[in-house]
Length: 499
Image (cartoon, rainbow, N blue to C red):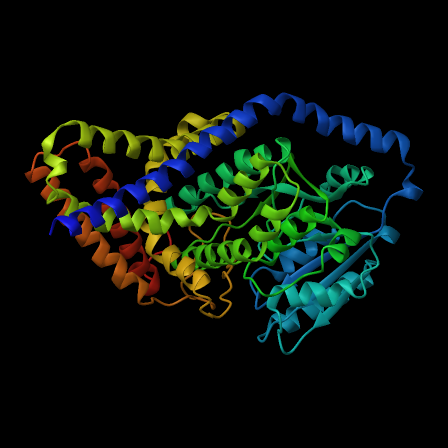
């Protein structure tokens, strides 16, 4: 029995240590941001001024814009129209609609392409019937005939501004730059509490994490959309490959291992539609989590053998394995009740205080980063941070879904590519229930319910044994699992759109 207690203790402390490591890294990234943000803001303006002062329009680079789509009947017209409105010399702009659709999106997209051709846009339409390689395969196919030396990519839920290229292309005057990622914006963040929470999470990643990695000389990544690649970089790095679910992250690391520099322009914002249903969000998260671990397995060995600095290697490891926080969360929850029956937990107050301190540091790191992102990005940040507790619940409640993804990646379990449905939702009151592409409820929700009940049991037991210091964290887990479960059921049956 004593051996079993030590096993539980070892698992518990290991998971806590892992969460502490990832949590403390958030403070490190915020520090990098603080040290570099003034210089970066001036750099953006200087890069633009130098480019337009020294490069005449006749020497501007030819840009190919690729639009990989699959069954996007509600947003494809909006996408093509916005891209064809980009302010760039017509003879230097090519648009490729890479359509793998199997529904009436094909008809809608073909009609839009014909319309834009009539308007004088250099736009082409490529339709594949087999979808081999999914998005990576579509991008690879389009690259074969791409005219541009630069290649911009936009997913169907994005709406690039007319000045997108004029703000972004100047960065490529530096021949070392292989890719530029811009910051994601939101067109429907105020649609529901769910989209509010997601928007804060996205802001944390793009407002702080990506900026800090780029400005601090660390490895960063292309986020699959809202960015521009140098065609030569893609080719030298081995092209688009489909052996991970995050072909964008994989290509980014292969390019940086080849010596290319990736940049981030926080001043350039590309608006996008946030998933309005929890099941769409879970599908997106599952793909990102599994793909990140697949990319880690594929590239970390090469990175560790490279001549990159120790700091770069450590940060790359934390970057690629970030989704490991979700299995660690589950381990903390599952071992919490057994810990109550470990004698060491009652011997002295020092142990509960230690656990409380570690949990605080692990939790406050990400929370502070998200709060920091709101403060640096929005003037009305004080009114926005009231949704932060909801993001914390969402982040813990999604742990079951993402743990499944991580385990599939670690054990090389194959799963289908499930796209994130887009409904063309921009504001409150717009309806998604009667539209196609809904993702049904799945068995993961049963586990979310079980973990919610288990966490609640643990919470009550900790209160019963007067272990109040750890109880608030079990309350967060309980709230998170129940929130995600009930919203999954609600959206699975399509009851209301404003939850």
